[in-house]
Image (cartoon, rainbow, N blue to C red; front, side, top):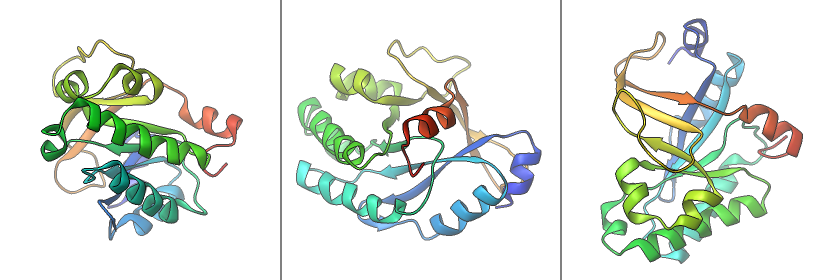
Length: 188
């Protein structure tokens, strides 16, 4: 990836994968450094594989070890789209989301949830949907999700100079960088 070209193409932020389950993404450290050098605002997501609250604690602790010493202008998102978890029901899905986010918040990170519109409406309780910032995925010409959200992922088939192949396209509706810096969150 060439994040200088991404910036030159008019993009201002990137939300990159930090890891999945208990494994760090092998490209995360390099991508983080290159995005920061290019002057992009950076957020991350952690792909949930937890099927219990205890497993979400382990995932939270893993990402905390990876985030240490870095600064993020965008939230730390818990990406929950695991059908095996959804099959266990709304109560457990919500408990896992709350646990992960609460652990990150206790460590001065601004945390949110990433999920599709359908999953948000079906598998998360109202506390999750209103307590944490939401990054909603809906591949459509407008977002029809009725709950509060600050980032909308509108496509998974976009093209951006500097990135080979398809890329997710997102719109942000918050000045997250100012929030993080003013509140001394996410490493600031």
